Image 1 (cartoon, rainbow, N blue to C red):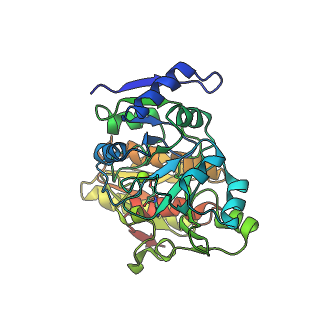
Image 2 (image 1 turned 180 degrees about the vertical axis):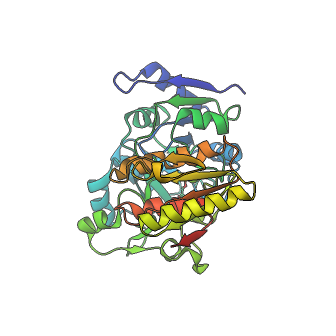
Image 3 (image 1 turned 90 degrees about the vertical axis):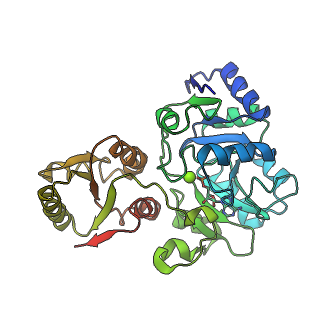
Length: 349
Ligand code: AMP
Ligand code: MG
């Protein structure tokens, strides 16, 4: 199959292209599309055959449920069997936006879409192209991140093409995703809301709206062996081909340690990549140094994380050392992805 790539301009979204992509999905095909978080791989959420195609295209295990994307808030009531008061307040505060909520599902949603679960994950993106596309596709678009399973999520149409070209009908190109990390996921299907995946909508932001929340232990204590409530969180994720290690501590100590480790690895004939920030990039004496952006602009750091992880795959590096970001307001979201990419290899200095 030849994958059509269509460029779109946010200032004047070409509705003919949107209609074409919508038709692809309504007829059971797949189209990737931009959202404010990462690119999504969209299929008809109410058609089990489409969900099967999504799993096949990504090489994703089919027990890993898909998030259903909607364009209009009221549509949640067509697929959720129950919407709690707390859920309503979160929807009011953060939809449209990078927050996914988990509800008990109505029978209309096929088991194939929810990986056999009795709940359904729903998100209403703020991205204008995404919402126009969802409406054109029939209103309910199942969309995981548009990457081959295990690889970093995609934040540009070129990344999507790299992973999925020839496997899907169409890619809508809306340029670079502004947030760059996937949505926060909150389970509101039971009495106490639980954060299953941290995102840029932080626990503090949500607690300001609904009061105390819990975070799934599998997120806060990833080494505990506890089974995550979001099935997808148990899988190996985001891993670049080279072995990634995070070096954590005070900046001075971190840069010194990375310089030592780099020199040592190079002596052994290894090629080294370094994930740095604008503030520290010129302190590294050797290795292939890539900056995520300025540490004081957290949104810049998160926007570039997956792009930088991917870009190392195009180089010949054998190992990568990364700085740590635990102190950022969105540090939990950022570190959750970085730690997964590193297989939890951390050196504390
Ligand atoms: P992705 O589509 O790549 O952003 O991943 C979606 C994440 O949402 C995965 O970790 C899924 O396991 C999780 N998820 C989707 N639906 C549910 C659900 N009904 N219950 C719990 N987690 C879910
Ligand atoms: Mg994903």
